Length: 219
Ligand code: C5P
Image (cartoon, rainbow, N blue to C red; front, top):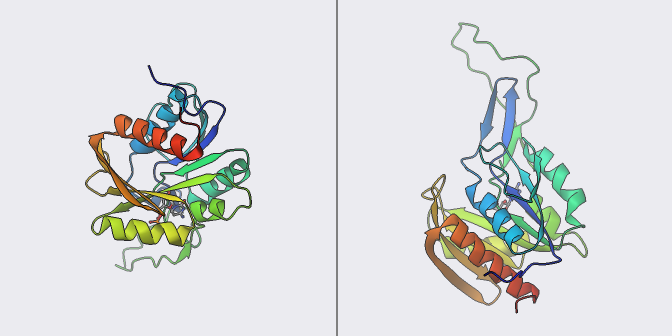
């Protein structure tokens, strides 16, 4: 029996990749299955929270009892999340948001003209959703994710300060992308703690219990 560690709390979660259109049939995206974010949404709901999940394009069923909002691009994710953030006590950003988008998406499919010329695509920086929520006065308790290929602890520590959030959860990507198992490293102001390798739902439950304890609701 799991105690309802997050009863009465509202938890907002981003998950999955974002998709940035180049033209109506093409785009750029990041590798992310959304599994970790969906597992956290399920675990938070199981813990009694009211959960809102803002998801990029993924192929996953909505966890039972979770309110889901589907988006495509980083800008759409930002525009969905920001007005909701003030109504939530916790924000967990697991989404693999594209850092850049094509500056101007073409209205029609870009055609090969046979000359061998390739189109030049200029990029614009996307908004940093987590940093924007972390800056909100009186905003939710913010948890960020860091997927790194090396020096996980150092990058996670730096990211925590850069984003201005109390907790960063590091995982080793891209080894974990699309996989059912993951290893998490929790980095806060006091140091770091590893959660042992397990399936993503087990880790999600451990992370939710850890966050509940930080909020001071744990029994
Ligand atoms: O800067 P980086 O992408 O490595 O940071 C990762 C963390 O920031 C994740 O929690 C991710 O969901 C969040 N993020 C965001 N908006 C962005 C980029 C990253 O919310 N544009």
